[in-house]
Length: 296
Length: 143
Figure 1 (tube, each protein chain N blue to C red):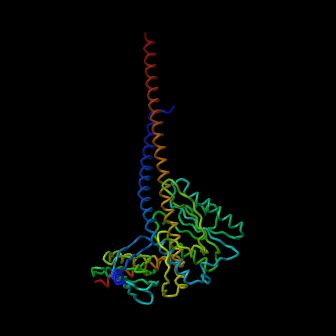
Figure 2 (tube, each protein chain N blue to C red; figure 1 turned 45 degrees about the vertical axis):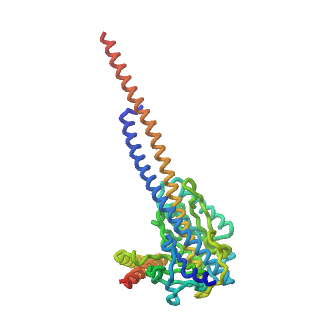
């Protein structure tokens, strides 16, 4: 049986760990709040933009000739964007996204795609994908915990270019959507080609649809050609924000569990230490008594 | 009819960016930098949608004061006295920190130099540089 001094040392170390996990839990809570605010801040912009886009689409009447809407029959090369965190210690957060990403890649391969490449947003995803020997076309790192619109635009720029120049025929995005503090939901969306029905239908629920015909300066077709990339930027930005919020929520939960576990471990160890001390004392008394008996 | 016309002497203006709402309120007039030149919008303007280039967007408030924003590329939509400005970034001229804007310009230049042939990074750095320049130009004009 371990001596009470050994157990005491272990208790100290678990206490140290608990301090760290508790601090990380608090940090994650604070960041989570900020991430949730960012999602809220994006909402008015995103819904206004969807509305403008659908207005332009309806007034232009003709949606052909827009490269981002071009649905190619044969998908030979596809890209999967995986949005993960830059850091671990968040439970199954990163693994879930990657597993879903592999599933999407398999489906694309079954549907006839010859090659599926990954675009990794987040250091953890990039690392695991490379380790598994998957082909990572590009990775974006260091922007997971509080992504900015400019970060998202950079990712969008890359995939839009790949798509327009025909190097990929389809782009999917996989990310953790933030459902609630306790729940993250892995979400798969098709990014490119842009789904026509999403362009035409009204995006904002909170606004009445516009009826009047507007003057477009320049023409609605040109506006649409410019709005679509902005729509991609916004979609990726939203995915990154959701993922950031989900990451902080997942880390908070993981760290809370770790803190709780450390607490019960400390209780168990304290009990063991007291027992060890008690038995040591009993042992000593027995020895003294036995010694006294031997003398008399 | 005349009472209705009297009601319509103001514009409801919203300036939105992906990172938040920068302005939401009423104004008497708005002047925005469209790609075809500056466009002034008064109440009862007909519906219009226009591209914006980086520049300054000026609001003439109801009390005759002026609010100026440094805005980037984006869109303006006017409909029934509601004006929507959708831009990547917008900053109130009075709140721009000249020192920070200088710093941002320097960082963008560095990033551009470091980007090499990484297309996405070049695009990001170029647009960051344009934004910084625009901010500096707007405060320059305010002096």
